[in-house]
Length: 286
Image (cartoon, rainbow, N blue to C red; front, side, top):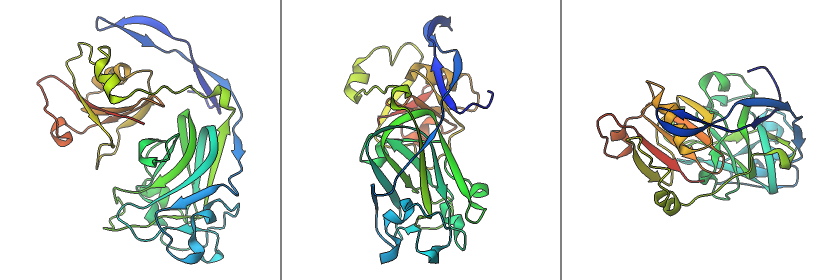
């Protein structure tokens, strides 16, 4: 896809795939400019403060100095699942989030960190933007690590957390020398839809004859890095994408954003019964 900092506008059409009537979405790119959201003065919080001068607000003070001792970086206390978040005060159409890593020491602590954006104050109910921080991304002292929300997502909360300890520490902390958020005009953001577990169980279109076993969970698949992250209109489209990928054994789908994450995790690891020739997928509500 050609470089274009803009929205993906979809024109829907119906077609038959494997004998099932499904939506397909030819994509066109309408360039819209990302604008920086001023985070100074907004309410930031984190699981705990490492020291009095490492409060959550330091990550949105407008100072991107990557030296810990410049007193412009936030740092959580040591915790098994540290997190940081900012309340934007209202819904915004988030397109890109950038983290400024620490530059004078310990920058590998961000390995495995996940950036999320969404409407829920419980950050773990919100969709991730992009993939977790890799060792290569965290290897640059003071590096600016970008996360693209594709598609853009309506969000009041932006957060960073690390629960998988990919950096090898039993306990961990998060240091952020600046968090920068860029947005599109709200009216151009894909409008989200919400659906409860009960409604999805009652909706026969979700379990349409695809020989899959539905598993509803309130959290992400643990200890698994996605094969890929794509945007789909429905759980069925996400299922078909997984079905056509020989490495994909499961996926989760976020109803509010349309984010479809493919995994090579088999049903046994998801504590669900796998049937011969079937795929198991988890629907993450949020």
